[in-house]
Every structure is written in C-alpha cells, then in structure tokens.
Length: 164
Image 1 (cartoon, rainbow, N blue to C red):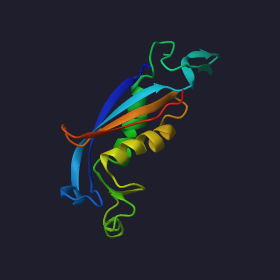
Image 2: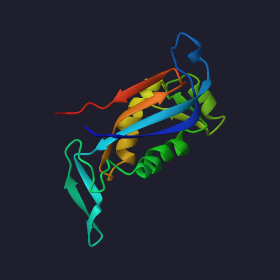
Image 3: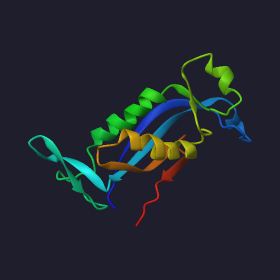
C-alpha cells in the first residue's frame, strides 16, 4: 500500500488519571502528530471532473489520483493540522471522568474534556477513529495511522486495521 505522511506540532497539557508516576500531575508537552493517509476505497478525484462535476473513481489500495498522489498535502494540513490548532493547541486535555475536570472546567474555557484518559495511545486512536473520518469525509482519503510524540524519545502509534 502506498501512503503519504505529514506531521504537525502543537503544545498541549494533560494529566493521566491513575498513572503511578509524575504523569498523574497536570503537565504539558510539545506534541508532534504524524498523520499517515491512504486512498479510501471510493474517492472523488478532483482532477477527473467533467463539466465541473467531480467524478467518483474506485481506488484499490495503492492507487493514486490522476496527478499521482494519495492526496494533496494541503488537505491534511487544512483538515487535520488545522483541527488540532483549533481544538487542542494551547489547551488542557482532561478525561471527562477525571475528578479534577469539573473543578477546573469552570475556571477556564481552555480546558477540553475528552471521552478517554489522554494518554498518547488514546489520543492517537481518537484521531484515527473519531476525528479523521469526519474531517476527511469526501476527500477520498483515510487516516490509516497516527503517531503521537510526547517527547523526542517517547511516542505511541495507532494503526487502523484493514480488512482484506
């Protein structure tokens, strides 16, 4: 399968409920998100338009558009990187079940309650399974893998299972 990748950096705070070490405290990271995209089974090839009407073309894994791309990198930037900027950059991610969530939420609208304990693993999975399908709908591309680096030494990756 052929894929394309773009990364994006944000600064964001979190805490991990139940962590046995320092990560149980509020803290932040300069996160790096690596987005790996693959062609969707059906896609609209914007370069294959007749009378300004997009034509749906069937794509097998590894199939590129008529220009020779999985997707233009600007789509990843506009749909995924910008989503991070608008929703999580310079914000504090707290699990909605975190005992601190209710107390801190009233203090500042920069707190984002998420439906998962905000580990790098859960953040990557959320991006692939929840955010990307909505953000990439209609672009003929799917986010098949997301790697989230908390530091240069520590990262977690979620890869979407494919059906053969």
